[in-house]
Image 1 (cartoon, rainbow over the protein chains, first blue to last red):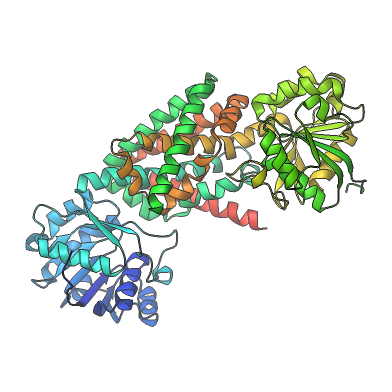
Image 2 (cartoon, rainbow over the protein chains, first blue to last red; image 1 turned 90 degrees about the vertical axis):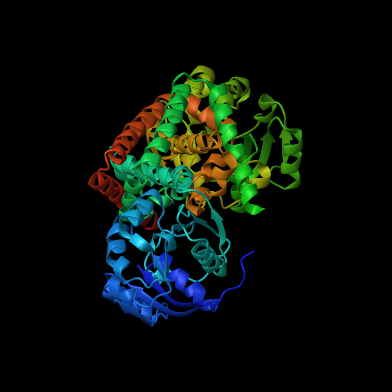
Length: 295
Length: 295
């Protein structure tokens, strides 16, 4: 159990979109934050965030934004993490805690080690496993994290108090927090999220370059809409995730491709027993998985 | 436009599950059938179908079931088509029309040519693009086909009147009927339905054999549930579809695997431009596809 702590005095959110905006809304609703400062590149989005009451005010310069902050959330694309860390490091208050919401952690660890200097022990890498295919502050809502998992991947140097504060912050949003190593996070997420996104993007990409494209899509059945939903995700965000976690993503894709080629061979050989066995195993595994989620 | 026709006098449904049961319910609701005879292997399911009012009575012998029928729907697994056709051929009334609901058509054409003899011109191969991941007569409902596509793949020999009658029957259920060749049907459906099912089965199969399986599934995010829904489909039915349409399914899988390996190579090379381009193309294609469905 984590002891109750005082609300965050000043939270600075760099990147006021679905992830950052929903955190601010949830903490405000729970009375767990006094003041929220936003920072980002799009002035219209920041102005809208103030109108919506998600943030109190904003800065467009990250170094200005973190002045006086007690907690900073980096909710920017993975490709921008290192640059933002370099910008804020000299301006961080000595006691300020920094965390992030990046979907891959090795590249974030690398950036933090390169850029945060003496602030490294108060940096807690994190990943809320939540989101929709929509993005931007308009899409944010206070219950995004309720019942969802947040993974924290503390480094060897991470200050236990900083870790506890970040955990408490996410728990105040209704999330279930767990900890694991950076490497393990990146392998697990490559398998369950990053690789499946690549598969869905590849499927729609393949079909879109089929001979009679419109007809191909016209006869796509109901299951197709579900199966390809994740292919409507933000291309830039997923490009960044694939680049940031390229080793684990390639390993997962290779493993999948091997299995798929084996299954293709079973179809070619008309090996009904092998197909039935694999399909039945998949169905049973999915049902066990759904039962587990409902516990 | 098809001229209005009299209701079917006696419809015989061989295989009283989701597909056959829903057709019977829809035609009854539309007042387009006088009598429905069921046939199948499971006595309990047939008795339940009578209780539910889906069929009027049943036979367990297909040859007995088709006696006096004016229309026969074969809604059995693809692997059972040829055997059922052999059994009913000698018992069909001279004017009786036969159609089917199989998800692949070349193997059904082959079975019909081998077994139906003089009844071949009154056989109309068909495929309703509808279904849920549930099966059995309990899962059937009259609106299953409303607004959905039904593809008919008439053979060179098919009697135009038989074709018109089958078209009218499906239109009475609210379906939109179109015609294409057997070969084209099998290629299009391999791309949009059969291959995606194999991909989903393969993904869950791969993950279920990952090192720490429970943990892998525990961190699967929301998109995973959608993405793998079709992996909860009936393993035997999908085995049969893969076997029946093996050439087109293998061709589609090979095409997909080539694209996936190219995408994997882009991740390995950290080629952000190639990834962004493919992901953006996929997202845009899916959005065009959804817009097309809503027209």
